Image (cartoon, rainbow, N blue to C red; front, side, top):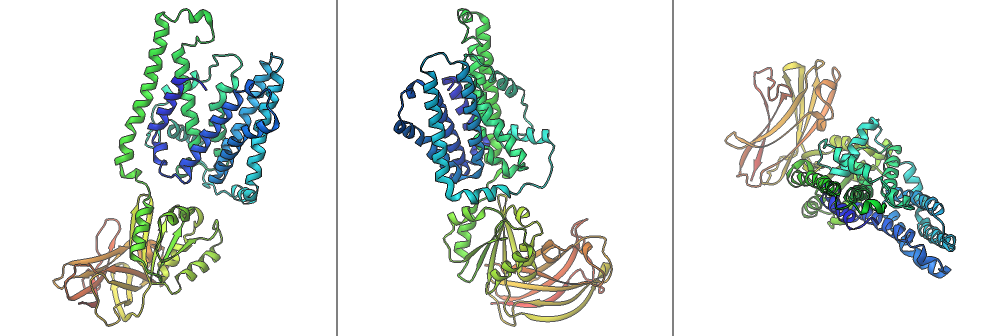
Amino acid sequence: LYGVIAGLTAALLVALNTFSIYYAQEARMYALLALWGVASMWILARILMSQEAVAGARVRKIVLLALPLALINVAGLYTQYAYVYVLLAQGVIVLLWIVSALAGSHKADRPVSMLNTLAIYVTASVIALALFVPWLPVALQQIAIWPNTGQTTPIFESLSVILNWLIFGITSQNASLAVAWLLLLFGLIRIRRGQTWMTLLPVVWVLISIVLFLTQGLFRPNNLKFLLPAQIGIALWLGRGVWVLWQGLSLGDARLNRLKWLPTAWIARLAAIAAALTLVFALYQGLEPLYHDPAYQRADYRAIAARAAAELSPNDVIILNGPNQAEVFDYYYDGVASVYGLPPGLGGNDAQTLAETQAALTGAQAIYAIFWGDAERDPNHVVELTLDHQAYLVDDTWYGDVRLARYLLPGDMSVRDLDVSFEQGIRLIGVRWSDAGTTLAPGDAVLVALEWRAETVQTRQYKVFVQLLYPDGTLATQHDGEPVGNSLPTTARQLGEIIEDHHGLYIPTDAPAGDYTLIVGLYAVDPPYERLLTSEGEDHVEIAQITVR
């Protein structure tokens, strides 16, 4: 489109951009979205640049020439609905091409070749639309209700983040855009007549994508992946800026071409090299944190799926709480446990979500709940609250930005009435635990249900700890958290309110046989670990003896 220098520069900027690298592993959607986007733009440019070749084209040839663009466009639509940004950019580029072609029309056969070229584009669009029609009603419905962030971010802040990601990548921390702006400005300079559409192709590609993205209210880091095709567009724009600067603005002026030996021409070329190297160096610096900073660790669904397949039985349940997890999880998971995507559909119906969550738990023994982006479809946390009230959280583990919470449902439980008063007016009035009078083995779980009553209104937050002590009194395992899965802090409880608080502990797999002690207590969140004392002056309560064989 612009030459070797622009193409190689753009390729290097894409290859080193951590935005592209970060999503390169998502070959089933977002990397594929970028591929279809750049492939379609390349084919469109080839079509628009080939007027002379299609001047005498017949209908059959027009259809054959249109097929590659049509098939790639329909593949893009089926891959991700954000591909519509690319399609709209294509339409604007074709309009610019028409204006540019009409303004420069001088050959007798130019109108015929223009019509044939336009016919190729229209035919490609019609074929793509026809192939997408079966899915079009669903696509329109989902695009219309595409959930936005619900938050208003200042436009300049949004643009700053978007441009930093597109130019420097996701690890960019407010990198200077000065050199990039310089190259983008040079990239707007037309150095050949009749090529306005070629000059503006990457500009339209980028601007249409960003404007539509912001207009839909989609701005947030997790949604910026919709702009991956535009990242290639801005790399091409920057590459063109390097090319224009390298040419010294003289390619279209024969008088200036004769002066290329002058120092000014070499200064321009050195400036082009310096600008390109500045961008490359900034991109190179972004690679280190991408590969080594835990903040950029990707969600490891493969590890979660492998763990679930190894540990869960047919009576167990996996709950995917968040949007679009099923596609990637099902790709890796081939276990026997049932998998439920909750909330159903796009969420928003809390009563239905509650009913389906309760139904999923019926007959289950262990539950793996995988949380990612759950606030978007389950803003009231119906799924997690249902699990916290009906099951027992044993542990949760982060796999990148995805959280795996493991819950168990109890069988028979031992019951003990208590009346233990802690400082600050907190009273423990009952306890249940899951040994049911039997011995347990290493690796088994102890499930504990505590009944608390608020004797006074609390002004400080406290965490509950449940610990299992070895026969010698040292710590074997524990579970800490604010009441009811951290969902009901002590400061939120009403005077006299009674709550049931669930905790789960796994006995260590190397635990020796013997009699273990189960204890309960509370400590302050701030300052941390300041334990509350009972009326007897103890900082914990012994609630049961557990025999491990």
